[in-house]
Image (cartoon, rainbow, N blue to C red; front, side, top):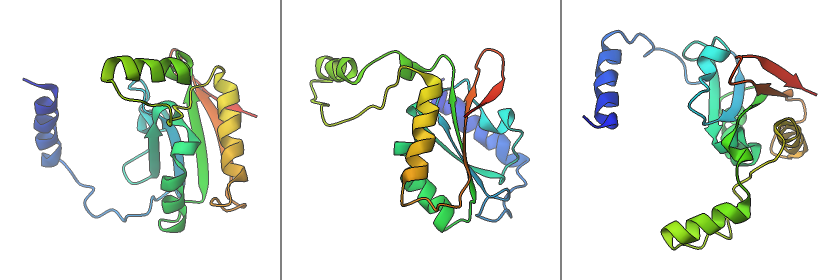
Length: 163
């Protein structure tokens, strides 16, 4: 059985006990979390979130530049009033450069990817500082929105604030 078929079957089972159909669209705790798509990170477990508590915006590296569109919608239309940026240890974004990934895309796919910034980084804590700074400097994010940054340790489960 294909993995997607397994997921569809799991969804059928989930539906049997589903009770969240009456939740409102805005997140109850009025917070948006920007984090990595890494499969070792499950924000609802790490942060003990229930369904309907928060917006979770995920992308490669948890990069804020890729999340601004979603954050504007989250804040302006759905009422979130805080942002947590969470990057993590042992991140795949530490393993390549724009140049090396562009070369791989060209070699493997025959496609020119030179216009894409894949947003790699070399230091996890600095990437958090950079992303928090980007959001604080953005005119699209209200100045009164608290924005805090963290590093999640995929080996210990610890969440550490970056200042």
